[in-house]
Structures are given as structure tokens and as C-alpha cells.
Length: 233
Image 1: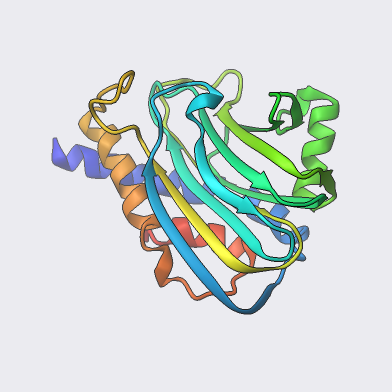
Image 2: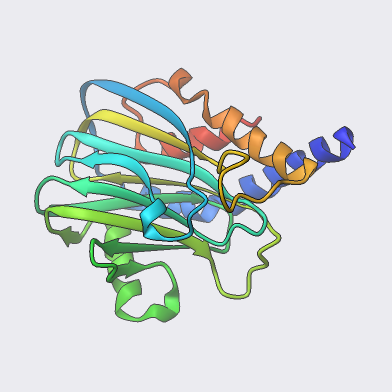
């Protein structure tokens, strides 16, 4: 049973490395954000809420122009339909989002009222146009509270775990904040028990990304997000 679980993790990692190549190239082409001076790094590992609403959103920090960069890595586990992340923007400006991970992951940016401002689904019309601007660092957002909603693309099986990492920045940065979001703690209301293979997959991801402090400071967005997955090797 243990060998099967480890084999499942190895297979997942191989598939993951192949699936993120296109995303990495897209991030590289739009990368203009630079580290300023000696970057301070902060890291936390948290359990996601079992709630499947914005009320259970995981807090990933405060996005301050030319000051902070926010990074989050997690997994949509089998039968886990949605993840929510909240953050605060301190001033109006252009925001950039980088993303790597498995194919079939949908990301939506919402304001505090729940209105979708940007959507990675190509069929979402204006939402997708805004998402492309967000990737390129050309989406202007106001000061306020925002939420990221992560789900599977339509047609993706709920049984397939989806690994992802996202990064938010406005201009340059001198403080880097990492959040590793694990599955809800066992015993939390609404949390489903994982199979051995699923737990091994999740533990493998969180163990690798938990070593982010070993990565040198001042990295580009692509290096930062890729580092979380390269640590599997």
C-alpha cells in the first residue's frame, strides 16, 4: 500500500512538471517585477477551512505596492471542489498575478462584494480579457479587500487532485510572504478523510513547499513559483 502511494506521488510529480512548462513561459514573458535590496522572507503553513464559501477564505496577507509579494501553494484534493484566498490591497495600482501548476485549474479574482473581476476561463468573455491583463501586470485594482477562487475547469473530474501555486505583486517588492495551505485538519466540520494515496500526494507537496526558506531571496516570480515544484526532485 505504501509503495502504491509513493508511486502515485512520483507519477503526479512527473505529470506536474510537464504541465507547468507552458505556464512558466507565459509568466516569463510578462515578468518585470524586481526585488529591492535584501528581500525579507516570511513563511507560514496553515490548514484551509472546511467551509466552501468566502467566509472560510484563507488569509494570504496584505498586498502593498512596491513593498510586498504574496505567494500561495496548495492542492485541490480529490472531491475538494473549491479553495478561497483573501488578501487586502493598500492602494490603487496595477496588479500582476503569476500561476503555475496542473492543467485544468480555474482561477477567479473577486472583489469584496463577490463580483468576478478576472477569470481564467477563456469562455468568460470580459473576465478572461481582464485575466490576461492581470497576468501581464496591466490590471488596475482599487484599494480594498479581494478574494481568489480556485476550482477545476468544467469537465475536470473531482477525483483528480490539482496542484497549483499563485503569486501576487504590485510593482517591485522587498518583503516576500509564502503561504502553504494544507487540507482542513481532520475533525473539522465538513472535512473528508483522505485515502492513503491522496494523503501521500498532499504530504509530498506540502513537505516540498515547506522548504521554501531554503530558496535564495530576490528571485523572479517564475523562479519562486517553479522552486516550490522543483523541490520534489
